[in-house]
Image (cartoon, rainbow, N blue to C red):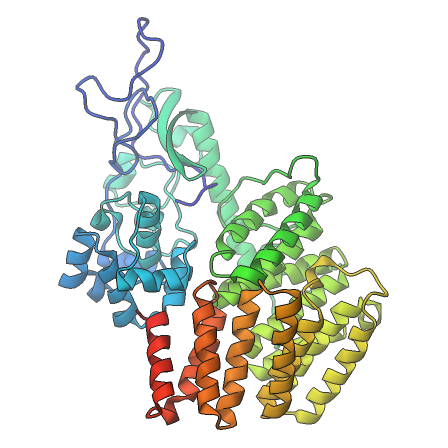
Length: 582
């Protein structure tokens, strides 16, 4: 269960009366057996009184897929029940488990890594090859949760989705199980009043909960338990209603009403952000800072880490932070709302870099809404421009153009030079994707003029990545899409050279630019140079985690297929296979 969620409570037994002769309890029951946690596993390192018995296992093949409807990856029932998978799970042979998921479902190593979280595609490759193993119960639990493998098959705790009602949008932890409800086959309704709680239970109950990723046993007042259940059910109903009422235009943009309250996912009647489902806990500002200052500091940190590491491993921690931050800014919108929007934009970019398009779209939409709410036209335009770039990567070039044009028209004359520069690159990329050479070159020229004005105005932090390297790289990408390979080679070579001088540790960008440069060489028939450049990019890619860049390398490998008999191509294709499939 992710940190920050409300406690999940199994059948709860009364606290026994404390013995006067004991100042503290020892771990274990009177018969010497350790207390069992929520999922029937011994509790470690926590002295407890009373007993929390295991929740019944409720997963079955018919409902497993429905319960995991909003998970990015769920392995098919046929694979889960196959003899190789059963044997691999029984022996915890993760090399075989990963290999089966990779090859039998066609899921890329990047997508596997993104689903697991805190893992890179290169590590997935190492695990498949057997050069690295899996340590720690928490990692095994993440793997079980990511693939949809019941916890008991891997000898770990059952995952949240196993006890959730089918179709629950967020895993729907069951807060309390009344045996009378269970007997009737109903598990999807938490008690909302004290009267609904079993009458024989005492005032104090013992529960197994997760706090900061660790299972602990705590005492909970009965009335607090019922109040918590009611709050969660009310929040869930409210969020579902808000989500269903989202209005989108033809371009996928956001409808903003006349009162400037954005109709976007997660915005309530007060125009303040809510996140669908748990967590219901806020986030604390850094010491000596307001929440706004803390958010700005965190944005600067993630901008730096993104340049050097990529989004695969960075998205999860930031997404959890913004989910908690949503609670805080809803309670006090005067502190942190603008930073919340900026961090959502950053989270959207990290999700996009990890090729998690649904998550990216959701975060970008939230950033657009916050920008409208706080009247930050630059943030709103920037988030729309990111949506445009996302559509460019998805090959939806008409949608990309519509979004870019919408972004450019938002108070363009009042935006900072770097913001206008960034908008110009998005517009140019969209035109290039559609093959409109004249419009693309015109946008690039306007973009250069805007960049020449950089330094004359104060710039928002979220466009701090726009520099001479970014400008040259975006020019190269446009020229490549237009088939102007010689111009593309010049711009990309310039970008790579500037990286070497000014930002040698921006490895993700270097790999990305090298992959585009290699594609230029392929189009020009310089196959040996294309393979040499591509091999260098592959070698560097092992130090980052970016599914987006892995996709670019895949496009390069595919473009070399017509030259499959050339020795250098054979070598590169094998290197690519080993790097991505093991």
